[in-house]
Image (cartoon, rainbow, N blue to C red):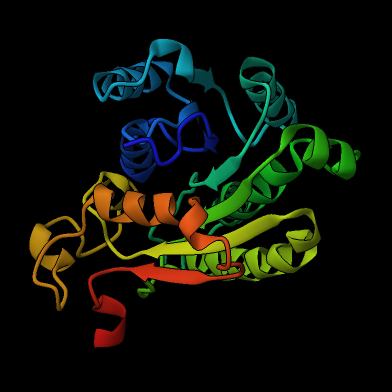
Length: 258
């Protein structure tokens, strides 16, 4: 399947979880991948999986680093364009959240949540001034087909205020981006997964999500990374050129259940 043959995807937070699932799925479509996360060992493991799906090693670029660093964000985009000569799709998947009731909320947790979930996504787009200082140059010289995709968790549970606030802010940002960048031929859409089988909820101590039964929904099964990856792939494809500012929920019907 060559649906995305030679199309360049930059996927943040792709060293594990949903980001890893998106990368491995896109490897099957012929895409070229720029993968980033903090753990280089994990990135290497994801690259190996992509290669096993038929992607040649030179079509997978690994950039380990901290996205909260402005210098790294700028370097990430420059490395991607330097290696592939273009950038087609930005998938903002990196995020974090900690279960912390408002009665015990700390400024440190609030700042980290907003930093990672909002600031990183906003300035991954502007690429550390690469785009904001040269919109026309970047869009016309490098970017030939662009979709901005933001992976945004939809689940709202008590003790989760900071995380929920950050995702509401990203929803507003993505819609605004869709309007602002439409004249450049750039589309911006949001993908909202419900609980998906990954280490995210266990790692960040979300209550009641440590067992698979709690993941159940009207569809009667646990959400898989592939469920999200196929939606991302569709939105980045030529089949979705009239979808801009969209918001697609991927949760097996859990949201409408409540």
